[in-house]
Amino acid sequence: MTSDPRMTVPKFLRLKQQRKKIAMVTAYDFPHAKLADAAGVDGILVGDSLAMVVQGHENTLAARLDQIIYHAEMVARAAKQALVVADLPFPINQCEPSRVIDEAGRVLKETRCQAVKLEGGAKQAPLIEALVTAGIPVMAHVGLRPQTVHMMGGYRVQRDEDQLLTDARAAQDHGAFSIVIECVPTEVATSISRQLMIPTIGIGAGPGCDGQVLVLHDLIGMTSGYTPSFVKQFADVGNAIQQAIRDYCEEVREGAFPADEHGFS
Image (cartoon, rainbow, N blue to C red; front, top):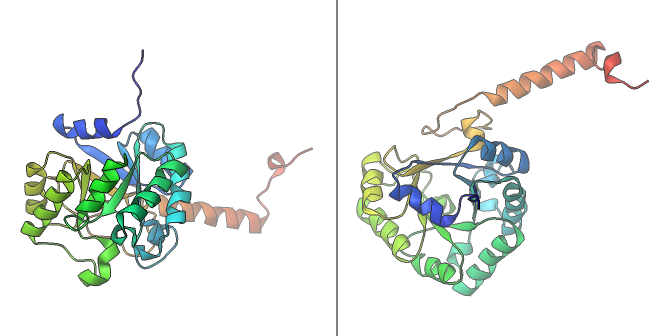
């Protein structure tokens, strides 16, 4: 019997035990998810960042659950190997456990996602436990939490090591299988990662985390507007697309396209 190549939650957990670095990206549609999956990422996050990346909003608060489900279904259908995780958008992580279970259950039932991501730490620990008890794997999220951007006064580096460790431990102890650590000093994120048994996924948290996640559009140069300082651009796809469209417009206007070979006889 051949082994299933698909990443699962237990396999994801074992990557830390095996001391293998974890590579994740966000994706929001079938074509990008298919490319990411074929390239060998370990996980794909259908983030509420779609509100900014796809819809053009100024923050993630505009993302709705039905939109997450719509995009997650496309992504999960494309992914043949990667673990697919979907965000629970604002303000679900502030709701009663029964509603959170219902909403997270919709995500798993209506998509092929294997897990959900819930922003929060110690305060959301009872929700994490309720979800896990209901059979829904949870990835937690500490540090900068975009859904509370107004409470935090903007997108700021989070430096309270005691609180960050408290949040991370609470998430782990209540059943989270992994934790995203966002915009935290390298030394702090490294220390937290060493003290946890579950994988930490950094974004703007330095190399000491067990893995990394980046917005796919950022790393391939398709960002519209501000690009965070922690992003490394691995390709310039955005300019290549613009140039291709310019060339197309020019050929259409000059009558060079379509040529005879592009028609039917």
